[in-house]
Length: 140
Image (cartoon, rainbow, N blue to C red; front, side, top):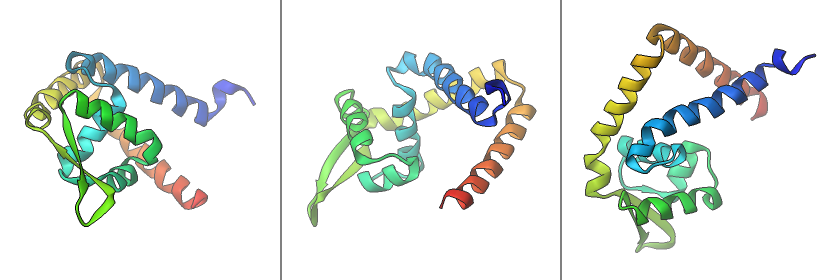
C-alpha cells in the first residue's frame, strides 16, 4: 500500500492545507486557525466554560488554555473564574471579539468563494461529516 493511496494521509494533508489557507486570511486579524476556531465556538454561544469550549473543539484544557491566554492578551476574550466553582473558567467575548465577527466571516467567505468551487466544497463537507460519524462510531 502506497502512502499516496491512504485516505488518512489525504485527510492529514488537506487539514494542513486548510489551516494554511485560513491563516492567510486570519493573519490580517492577528489570529491563528486554532484561535479562530475558539472564536467561532464563542460566536455560536458566548459565555461558555473552558470545559464546554474544549468539548466542542475536542481540545484538552492544556491545549486550550494557552490559546485562550493569547486571545485574552490580544483583546478578543475575557476569562473569569466562576464564583460558585472557582475551578471553572467562564470565557466571554469582548467588544472587539463581537465586532470583528462579521468582518472575519466576510473575509473567509470571499476567499473561499474566489478560490473554490462551492458545490464541490459542500459535497466534500457532506462526505467528511459522514466519515466523521462513521469513525466516531468505530472508536467510541
